Image 1 (tube, rainbow, N blue to C red):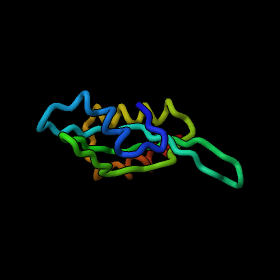
Image 2: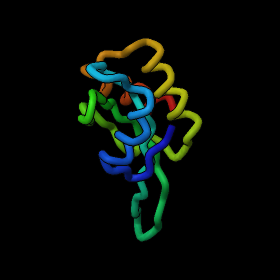
Image 3: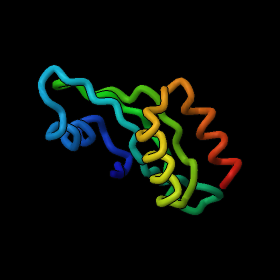
Length: 101
């Protein structure tokens, strides 16, 4: 899943069909950002940790602009979701990702 400079409403609509009443869903997602670097527009992908519950959504942690490689960031997101990574460790994991890529 990818959200292009997505507002909270767009992310919420995506998760609404998966979230039952009184259920809290926490997920890592890929986010897409358009950056301007030395006058040149570039697409970069990052990772956000979101929480959805009923009619509420919150971005609890986010690391933008990790890589221009969508597949690599998607793999990182899947890894974090599979491990149910505590968001307290997201910045460390993101730093390791940047060093390795």
